[in-house]
Amino acid sequence: MTSAQQHSTQTPNSNVPTHQKARFNNHPKAPATATTPEALKTVLTLVETAQLVQQVLREAFPATGFYVKTQRDANGARLHVEWTDGPREQQVNKLLLPLQSATPGQSGGTSPVEHFRLTAQGPQRVRLGAGRITVKRKFSDGLVGGVLQRLAHRHVGRLDPETRKLLTVESFKKGALVAVALYGVHFASNSLHTDVETALHDHTDVQGYPRSATAAGLFVRKPLKA
Image 1 (cartoon, rainbow, N blue to C red):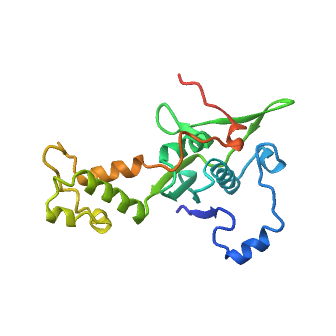
Image 2: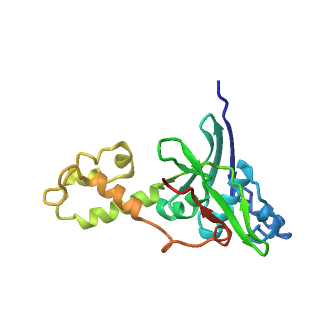
Image 3: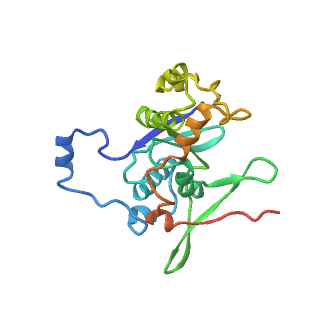
């Protein structure tokens, strides 16, 4: 029988009342960066790796709140990151996937990944605690509703009254738009539902691929492929 341990970390003060935040902020604590003692540890546990991931995300996407969950079971140690709206999954993966301590092997299984940082004494190896990091982006009703409004405006001349009634957040969540295909617009398996999904996944509130000073201080050396 295998046992699973879960732990979650969230952005500090995210659930603290405003009047208490002001009291806490009277004595601010400088966050750990790539050069502070907290960040210079050479062996990080799974929880410490989750905290490192939170630090990287705060630096790159300060306007978005992320939920990081840790899990340890027979398949190893993993991190799962979720957030609502904000950046695209590709933008987050660009920073987080290099922090995985393993990579898929040639014949199944995994191969370890070596992380290191450059110091005055030469490369210093760092052991991170998460073999795999997965991400999942969620979408708020407000964002979904905005996409539906834009589609209604774009196809105003093609929508009959009954179809227009289906352009609601509730209908989208129930999958009612899967069977709605507009003549001359949708082909094969495309529909209004796929239009909404495409627009949601393309949406982002940041440009390009933001950098993190903490992530930039870590280098990756993957095993050579045969």
